[in-house]
Amino acid sequence: MPALAARLRAAAPAADVCLIDDGSSDATARVAAELGFDVLRSPLNLGIGGAVQTGYLWARERGHDVAVQMDADGQHDPAQLEALLAPLRRGEASLVIGSRFLSEGGFRSTALRRAGIRYLSWFLRLRCGARVSDPTSGYRAGDRRAIELFARSYPSDYPEPESIAVAVRNGLRVAEVPIRMSERAHGESSITAWRTLYYLVKVSLALILLPVRPSRVARGGQRA
Amino acid sequence: MSPHEFLPREIQVLGTVILVAFLGWLVYLVRTQRVSLRDSLVWILSTLAALALTLFPQLLVGAAHLLNVQIPSNALFGAAVIYLSFNLLSVTVASSMNAAGVRRLAQECALLRAEVEALRRQGAPQGRTPTLELPEVAPPKARS
Image 1 (cartoon, rainbow over the protein chains, first blue to last red):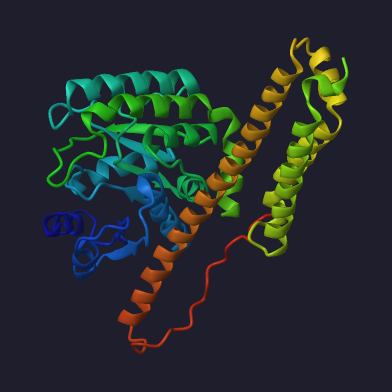
Image 2 (image 1 turned 180 degrees about the horizontal axis):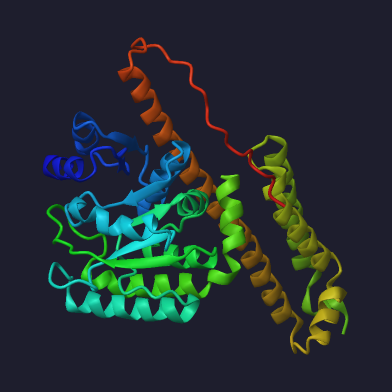
């Protein structure tokens, strides 16, 4: 993590950085706090969707105009921040996804997962017209509208593809930029090989059920 | 056919006793505030409906006839499954809403912890709770 922190500071010296500790029992929170990050420690494990939403709530509370979401396991390179932010700066999109498939080389995951991702990409396009080649990418940047939307309603279990659909449904423009990803330096994907099928079924169901959900999710978000 | 041909009086009495006891238990749970009135409503209403069917089996015979169910007791089993499914579903709904509420509370807790730590770093006295300006949180809407 210190290496990531240094690269992050170099790439974005003025950025306000928070790290979300989703109820982990290791020294993550302490190390991150010592490195000078704001640490958002959840008292219990919320799962990735709840954890990511905490970050968007934090960004909204602080009145930020841009929020970048990035994995802390070394997969996402802070040096590519500028590329990610470019479409936001040009006002071309409200949500920018970093895609490993639009770039040459870099880490591209296993064949099985690539097939799954291709299927999700196709399904997402079929379902709501979003053209995203890497819908599971967790390296993304959003503007004020995206922050507001995701602070209000963000899906829970495997939220990446579904959140794109939520964004499109709410009238946000979504763009994609080529990003090189590294293999994660620490830990394992939360999606193991034989859970891939479950993942695909669950995300497909979420995408199918989408039309009846937005108002309900928004209501839940405000209520809760 | 007479109602007692398929629902013998003994069973009718036993069913009534069980349902009335169940209803009494529900009322007791609500009065001692272990079940909220809102959550008990589905149970109370569906138990009253079951009680009505037990006291007036003609209703069941009529319903079975109407739906072309050959044996009224099969209609009774069907009604029991619906009764249970309906109540189970209402529990699932309540549980999902709780999960959403817990998630939001945990997030608020994470944000407040960060804020408290930031205030401490700024030199607020240790060991005393700094006064916080709480962010606005929309009050929970009553469930319909």
